[in-house]
Length: 218
Image (cartoon, rainbow, N blue to C red; front, side):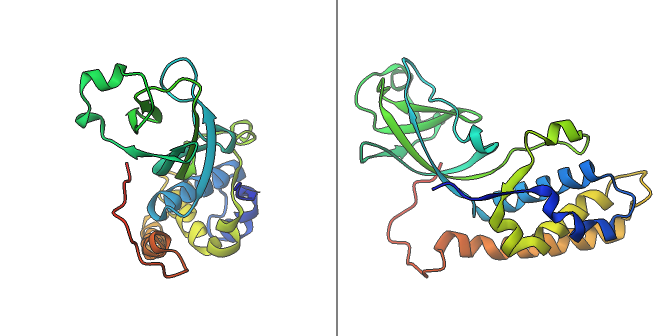
């Protein structure tokens, strides 16, 4: 279930004519930021990861091979046994240290997931909505060499939307030859309108499926 990836450089020729003078590493990072925000809003990038619980919680980090962060856990199972999402605030102290057959999964710290009770050696399968890792506009070409890919479907189906998001980040930078706050605001509106419009499609899917059960999102 691994999504094909594409280098962020593929978006450059859709962006460079509207941000003349912007360095390519800066354009690439703006593209990555836009892709992250689009995935966060829409939940469209879903992946499956299977990890083996070690001797103690937390679980091994998820989706590091994709340079992505978990935005929403949608389904978790151990050997076909469904686990349920639980908020940290609803846990008892005894829950955190309990050992046995896992029933729940909880995000204890940012990106740190615990199965409760803890079940050593359990093979845990996680389906989640994820997003490209965050970066900063100061990232260098060397930084981007390790985190330079995003899902290919963003280019094939949403290239103009991602370009609009990238242009918002670029043109809103202060003190640059291409700085243009007015145009940046217009691109931001175009980007958000398109992303928010796709969020509903992502939740229901293009099969027009009716949601039959109450979601157990974290």
